[in-house]
Amino acid sequence: MKNIIKFLLRKFFWGLGRHLLSDDWYAKVRYWLELDEWPDLKHPTTFTEKIQWIKLNERTAERQRIADRTKVRNFVADRIGEQYLIPLIGCYNTLDPTTWESLPSQFVLKANHGCGMLAIVFDKEEESYQEVKQQTDDWQATDYFTVGREWVYKQLPRTILAESLILTPDGDIPKDYKFFCFDGEVALIQVDYDRFGEQKRNLFDRDFNRIQGHLLYPPYEGSIQPPPNLKKAIQIAEKLSKGFTFLRVDLYLLQESIYFGELTNYPGNGFVPFQPKELELQMGQKINLDIPPN
Image (cartoon, rainbow, N blue to C red; front, top):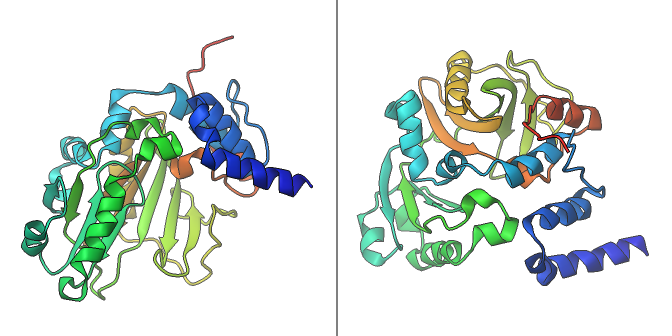
């Protein structure tokens, strides 16, 4: 019976219910629906609770600036230099036939106003313009703020960016290294494997010692060596995250180069906890919030 009731409540939430809720109640209700527990947003302790608090209370212009995929490029260039940016091919109001013809044979398309809206084109001659166009139209029709109530995406321009496709010498998509930074210091590194296949994910400390636990995906059990430029990547992540209570810095580490991926204010929108619970609490303790007294 409990499962049936929760199923119906979830259907109502994702239908009409979420539109009737304030940002605060949206966070509480969705947290309960997804994590099966009520969050303490006045005195948060876990990682996900504190991400919710940041989302609701740290509404700064700088956080919104780094969520904008166009403006964040200037932020990165100012802090660490434009040599770490993936070359930008162009920024477009729409993907029309003229724009499509002007693009190179390989590229990546991204929406400016949200996460997960990405298309990798390995060979333009083998792609259907109409299908890619429909995909970008769907992105631009999506109010990403309304869907997840991530304030930083509210009213961002719904433009389309085209960037160069960065590949390893073997022609593969490079591994995604995500640096969890607390008060400008890296404390945890997430590495994703086979992101577009059977995705695996491992967690490490800043010295690249394996952390026992997981985050959403099962661990990769193959042989793992620290990348040769790990120390430099940590320095870059800490420069980019300076001044933020928490920020995740995503970088691509190739053999000879480091490229900026994105800056993430709210990993998993604050609804994806670390497992086990002890790790969730440990990561939560690392976020120092300026919570006013009652």
